[in-house]
Image (tube, rainbow, N blue to C red):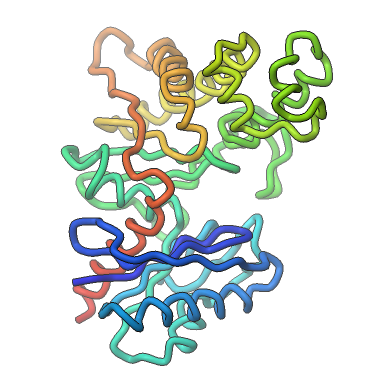
Length: 321
């Protein structure tokens, strides 16, 4: 049975028809305006209608970058989109106008995590943590084969664990959150700072960014590091260290079988993962007296949100039918 997965970002949405093996059989996208929530509803409905012309489906999963309510219908808060107590699921269902379709909303980290658990790097385990290293730090936790959602739907917002008291300000309204140190945005911030303060060491990065520190982006750091640039390697190592230290704390709580790392920064590969593993082992409680969970790259890439949202919607539809 096919289902549709929708991965909603701040400026675009990606929509795909997904089969039961996790394969996307058709795909489309739409641009959106993050401060116009209604435009996102309409763009989703339009994209789904386009795919419905050629494909039969009975469930739609919406992967949203925000705090999703326990009823999997509302986005209660989103740092980068104008969602506040917003009935995203109801709105999209109304626009689709079909009583035979199940529409559910999930956090985008949960969707990506479920894709990895069912089809990807976590498919052979029962306990897994996914971290998506993008603009922020998304996450999902699977314990005994089930996503951990919490009493109110807010579980697994690991990027907002406080790791540095009075540290960098975060979009959630607090300071010192983990995602301010373990994310693509943190990598860019530190790279731009290095380019301003240490222009000689940052020559390779500056060249890639047209000699303008403010134009440095994450892919510039990765490209420089892959080419052997010392500063690029150092910046990725620092990011990896923050990831590994946080994973060590999570191991004390969850004791997962594997940590799966996804998101755009994973393009750096071992330049990111090896420092993460080293920091993880160095900070792991009871080191030397317990198994060391592997830290591995995600398999699903940029399609994880679509694939996971569709799988979760299919599962919800099966439960309610």
